[in-house]
Length: 136
Image (cartoon, rainbow, N blue to C red):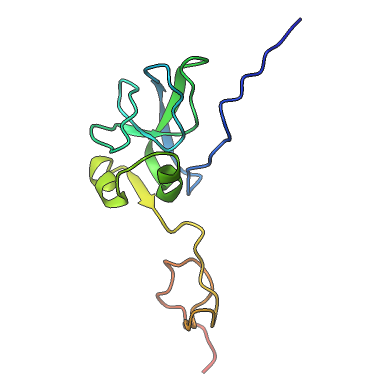
């Protein structure tokens, strides 16, 4: 038996959390669509986000298999989505898709003394109470 493998591209992880909800969508057209692209209910890619119903979870090539999944609730790394062709800002996407949190600072951490901040070295969003529990 002869098998054919058709690579669509590298797999891009756009999720910033393991807790998400996705629904099936059939991608329209013949052009491959990258993960992180805003898509409508009809499967059309909308880089600016206008009319989007969700964010494409994985790369999809409708010429090979038009079936895909779009994230409708969860936390998304918006900087990765923008690398894959989405053009809207995180604030605009938050207004269009209120069930999704669009983070642009995923993977950003502060180190103690690295930038003059005596923070805990944890998540960039966890500065509040960073001195709690320190010896006085």
